[in-house]
Amino acid sequence: MPSDELPTFFRAALLEALDAPLGYANAGYHLALHFEDLLDSDEELEAVDVMASAPDAEEAIWQWTVEKIPRCAGLVPARGRESFVKGIMRAIDEERV
Image (cartoon, rainbow, N blue to C red; front, side, top):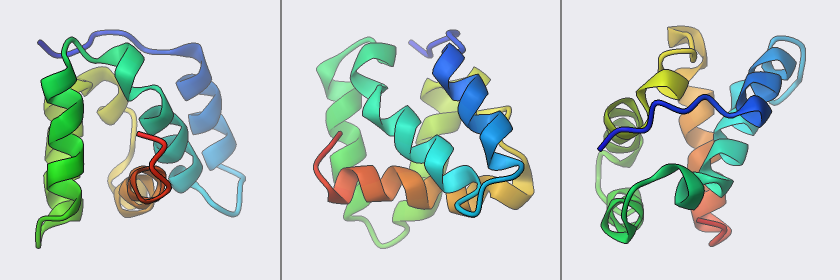
């Protein structure tokens, strides 16, 4: 089931993204650190690892975020999506997810 929560830390990260050199990557990274708290099951979390190794990983992770955490994804503007997903990918690469 998609999460309707909008964590306070994520709102703050989005505000920082407007002026920060890393932009939306930092917001994606920090959101990924909290996936376990925001998702309903371990299977949803495990899906992220599988998607990260797919040929179209960035698009797959973005679509997954839209489906599973729609309120958060909906606040990321189109111009920031690539950076946002790279932040999620960084957290996965660092095994923080």
